[in-house]
Image (cartoon, rainbow, N blue to C red; front, side, top):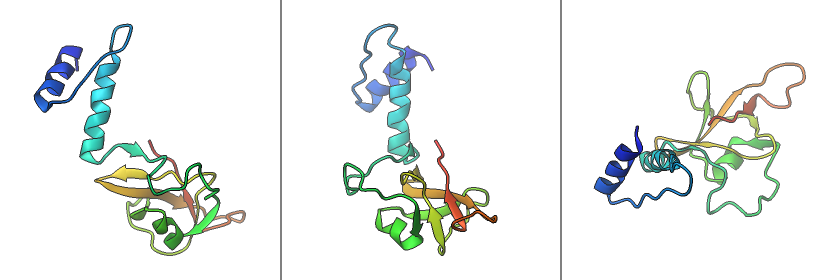
Length: 126
């Protein structure tokens, strides 16, 4: 996409698009980001308005229900795309779900093995 195309799309949509400094190439990425948000596919969620701020230490092992209570709509296996409805999930240092099809989705992978603390481990997707 060119800057001219980005500006034309923004104008047709009634969206204010402004470049800052240099070549103003950032307007292309900025418009793309707006499109992802509007389409419900905007990548990793780092904060939701109902999450405590600053973060309250929600980390480590949690049940699926605890994860749902934070506003996650679905816990899904990354390999099969199937929902996970039972078990513990190691979310690591922070809860970092993704927004997919307008829903908040936490992707997990199997963490079987002798050192696994839980059957599922959250993974970070972009």
